[in-house]
Length: 182
Image (cartoon, rainbow, N blue to C red; front, side, top):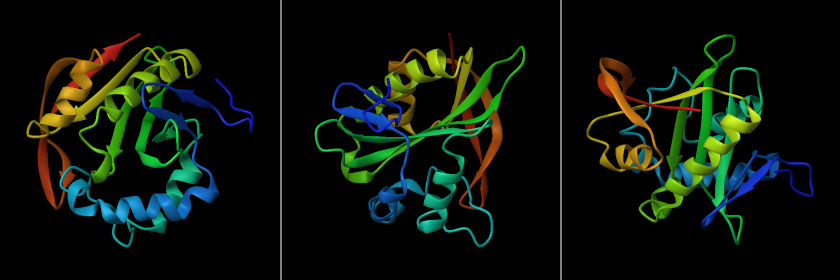
């Protein structure tokens, strides 16, 4: 659905998904900074010199929110528009595969309220209807119970286990491979 400002948005139970705007910078960066200890144990190690909890992160969001290879949406409160987190479809592969990798995070103060469950449900509508994808894969660390519960609740099926899949905080971490098909 497109809002009055021409910005694609989806509204669901407690959340609104929309593309980021420059005016979101301060709020986005503050949410990332205040949630750093909560998030960094699950997030990939950033490249040297890249501040994953500062303006660098927001610059990347703006630059890559609508590209051939990536689509990024902010998760916001449905009534007040406050930024809660972010969902992205990364490494979009076209051709006969029509697949991407799902990435997401929720600010610490908004976690545990069901917002990400609702946001992922909305984002799947966007991915399948608007982006015309066939398969979405989410890779989750086995110890991340909240993330496992969110993908399971949205219909993702456990497909496999990937040892030493992704470098997080300087160590290669095992991940479970979850996926959903159109």
